[in-house]
Length: 374
Ligand SMILES: Cc1cc2nc3c(=O)[nH]c(=O)nc-3n(C[C@H](O)[C@H](O)[C@H](O)COP(=O)(O)OP(=O)(O)OC[C@H]3O[C@@H](n4cnc5c(N)ncnc54)[C@H](O)[C@@H]3O)c2cc1C
Image (tube, rainbow, N blue to C red; front, side):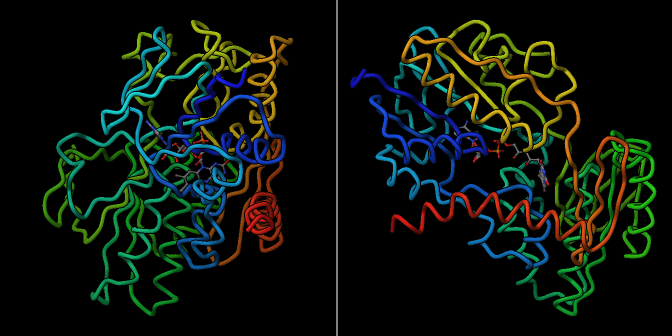
């Protein structure tokens, strides 16, 4: 067992839990974490971070520090391909890393057209560490009036729009926010009541909304939609829906219809039992209702850990049954939130306080560990 290697790919929400477990319970196997950035941002605090309610320190896990505390080797790099049969991954630096057991928690990616991806005034909201650049670009702009285009009116794009608007108020600058979506409604999977509350709030904040408009091309300072609407901009924040990392399909691993790696109830890849995965990057067989939200990555984490350890020990694995309903709180900006749970909808400051309590509690669990050991 001493020579066995557990490789963790991606420092996502589930793997942060695993790092914490390894710090507490020393294991006989060696662990390596590979992640594209030594920092991992917690998504629940994203929009409040933009409006300066939370600092970098509040929203961030330092993966390198967690690894040091757990005796884990950390490589700041990106896995670009997987050889599941030879049990190795290849990094963007060209380095090959072998494993006995591997777990993926690489999240989801953004689908941005190749021709637009390198546009200097377009920033994607994934990876979440990009939020730091977004905030700094807005704060440090020399313009008094900034035209911000947010692409995607799902939960992330909506929360981001409110956050940006609040930041503008704090800086006494005019942030003109325009929200564009190709769909016919905002938040299509949310209850009607929430859609109505959010629409009212968008209008109160003078956030313009353009539905049924799909981006066709992006030029310097202007965006053209397929219906030839022209929108001028200073910065574009891309919050289009999640998409999968193609490396799973390229490795000839079974993927679902959207390209996410398929795992069973033990969070084990259905082709290779020594490959595990959790969070946005997987699709769990027979549970198509699971959404790409951090809640699932967090709920899956204890099962992931238990099953990896038991796999090494050759003892039975535990079955994870994903919940259908989960508490969802959207931030409306300026410390107001709206909650949806099993058809219930509530709004206001206390809802935001509840979200703040849950999110800060989650962070504290890991931050305490980091501080205590320093
Ligand atoms: C603005 C915004 C707000 C959101 N708010 C909420 C919310 O309030 N509640 C909620 O439940 N969900 C929310 N979400 C969704 C949530 O962010 C995701 O569902 C969640 O982050 C998924 O967690 P994860 O562990 O799967 O991956 P992630 O948190 O995305 O982490 C993946 C990690 O893997 C790294 N990585 C990726 N690819 C590779 C690779 N090839 N090699 C090495 N490392 C790699 C990334 O850099 C990243 O550190 C929000 C999303 C956004 C964009």
